[in-house]
Length: 203
Image (cartoon, rainbow, N blue to C red):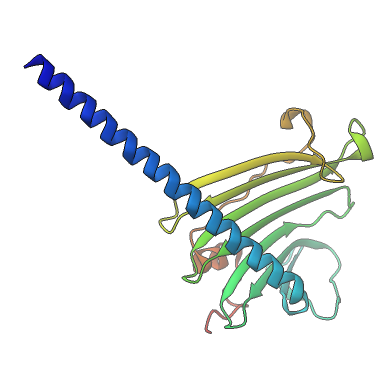
């Protein structure tokens, strides 16, 4: 009897292990596909950067300003970029708090799939720092989500101006403590950023 129980336990453990390995393999395939989607959007962005919808929040004002022909308003607080694909579907929304002094950069980017669900989120920041080569350090936090909005992969990196890894603790640098919020789909993101009245989601 004990032998049968032990055998059943072993079979159950092997079955659970096989499921875990299968899920791990599926996640790896999913991540590869999500990376491909992100790269495709970035290539599209580069080719169609003139088509980006740019909205700016000005200090002390609620109404956003739509930027055209590089006519930037004074006292810029936050910059929002919205990119639509050739079908009119929103594929990328970014939020960039603006540095008046120019001594730091902070940006959040959300990528959306063909169902307008979030599949990737990037949280990046750069600051000046005299203790590193070339004087600039960049923090990149990248997250990938499945179609159930479950985090399946994340990547954190710390690099210098030319992309070379910096092997130090991120807490050693004067980064902002503010972290970007990830929203599950286009509509929720637009609403949270206050962009719904400015951006049409109709294709």
